Image 1 (cartoon, helix red, strand yellow):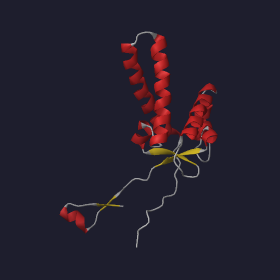
Image 2 (tube, rainbow, N blue to C red):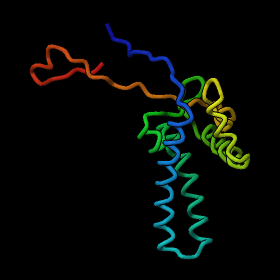
Image 3 (tube, one colour):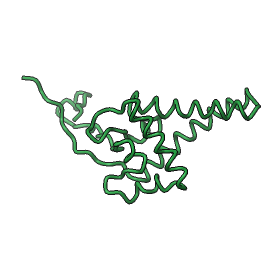
Image 4 (cartoon, rainbow, N blue to C red):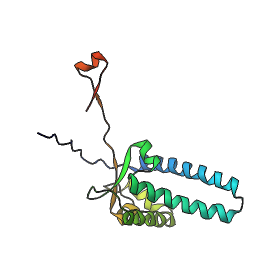
Length: 152
C-alpha cells in the first residue's frame, strides 16, 4: 500500500517576513547592479540592464521555484490560490502588480499587513498567496542512540 504524503494547512506569510525576503532580494539585485555599473559606467546601460535583470530575476524565480532567494532564505513560497505552481502569465501579472504597488506609494505592499489572507494588491491581481513552508522536524527515536535520526 502506497503512503500518501502528509497534507499541511496553509499558513499565510505576513508582512514582516515578506519584507525581510524583499530586502534580501533587493540586496542581491543591488549587488548585481553595482557590478554592472563598474563595467559599464554609462547610466543608460546599467539602468537598462538592471531593469532587464530585475524582471528576469523576479519572473524566473517565481516560475522556476515559486521562491526568490529571499523567500528561500526565510522559508516562504508563492503559490496560486488553487495551490498550483506559478506560471509565466501569473508571474507577469504579479510583477505588474508590483509596479502598481510601487506607484501607489507602496500601499499595495503595506496592504499585506491588514488583509485576512495576507495578500497584497499584486497577489490579488495575480491570484496568488505567499505561504510559509512546513518545517521538517527531527523526531528522536530509538535509532537516535545509534547516531541516526528520522524526519517527520
